[in-house]
Each structure stands twice: as C-alpha cells, then as structure tokens.
Amino acid sequence: MEKLFTKSLLLTVLAMLCSLPGYGQAALTFGENLNAGKEPGTIYIESKPKGASVYIDEVPSGKTPILIRRVPVEDYSIRVSADGYFPYFTTVQVREGQNVNVFAKMVPEGITFSKKTEVYTTLMYEQSRIHGGSWAVGNTWGGYFHNINLEQTTAVHIAMFNTIGFEAMTGYGFLFGDRVRLTPQIGYAYVNTNDIANDKYWWSGYLRGALNLKLALTDKYGFSATALYDRTGAGFRAGFMFYVN
Image (cartoon, rainbow, N blue to C red; front, side, top):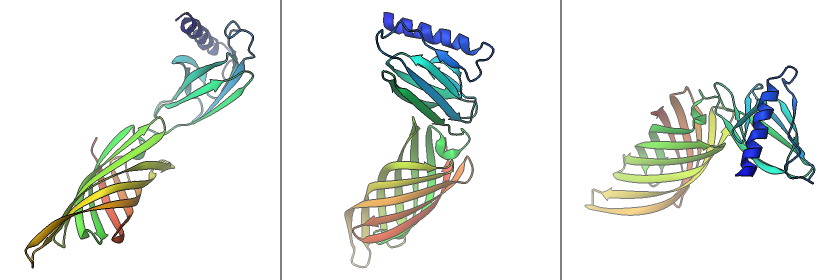
C-alpha cells in the first residue's frame, strides 16, 4: 500500500510538471527513491493522432509525443486518450536501464468495425452443397477489446432445396484501415434435409471453415462476403448488414 501511494504521488507530481511552460513534449523525471540501486529506464510514447492524453497507472502524465525519463523499474499500465477516438491500452515493463517505446495507433469512434462491441442483423444469400441456394437471416457479434477483435456469427438458413439449417461460427478478426475486417472462422452447421418426393427427412452436421470479409459502408450499414469450405466442398456467402446497437 505504501509503495502504491508513493508511486501515485510521484505520477501526480509529474502531471503538474507537464503544465509548466516548456514542457509541451517535455522529458519528465521520476523520483529516485524507488527501487534504489537499480538504474531507471525511460518510456517514450507517440500516438496517431498526436496530442493525445497519456495516463500512467491512471495518473495524468502529459500529451503525446512525450519522453518520460528516470522511470523506476516497475510494470506500468498506459492509457492514451483523445476526443473522437477509442482509448488505447497497453502494459509495459520497465527494466533496469531499458528504453521502452510505445506507439498508440488510435481508432476513430465513428467507424463501424472499431466500436468496443457491435451487433449486426444480416440478410445473406449462400450457395453451397449443404444449403443449396439459400437465403438466411443471422446476426454477427463483434468485440474490440484492448485492440483484439473477436467475432461470432449465427445464421438460420431457409433453402430453396428443401433444407433448413442452423449455424454458428467464431473467429479472430483483423482490421485493415478503419473499415475493413478480415476474419478466419470455424464453425458448425446443423442441417435438416427434407426429401418430399420420398417422404423422408434427416439431420446432418457439418464442420465448416470460412474466411469472412466485412466492409463498413457507413456507421450503420455494411457488406459481408464469405468463402466457405466443408466436407461437401466449397461455397460462398454474401450479405447486407444492419448495425443494431
């Protein structure tokens, strides 16, 4: 507790120093009483856009770009914030005599695929062996947490060839720029086939792989295209997404 209090007090003093004339991109100096005997390090923080606010262990510490000198050997959480952008989070480990560089590429709030959480209702068409030519309605949930994108898709298919199917897929999404997300996915489709001519129906399960590409058209609408593969062969899917949250 005493160590945490001392650390917070030093960071508060640093924040006060940032407001002094000549400290716009100033080098800040930590006290030397912590971790005595170990050579302190430095932290250099840049951001895009520049001029973002820096918080070290949630204590205001200046604006980017900023060089913080004589940082005691310790682990630090860093948050970089700017109006109109999602906060950037990271954790750094300062070791004896080490220089740590942080570049915060911040994501605009107004871009669809960069929201912290997102839910889409999707109208899609699929051409594949297990669904034939089918229309489906589904939902896509995406999560953007500390610069990691997770994505999940569910769909209900009503096929033109006497089938109905339920499908769930999940994957890791990669952002390209601000409006494009590419997501390798793996999932499972459970399909009911109804053979009307012979008065028979049956259920079948299929493990599926997919590569999904999403394009944000606006902050409310998007386009989705997916390449599919399962034991029956390759297929494709395309759809229109409506952002609902």
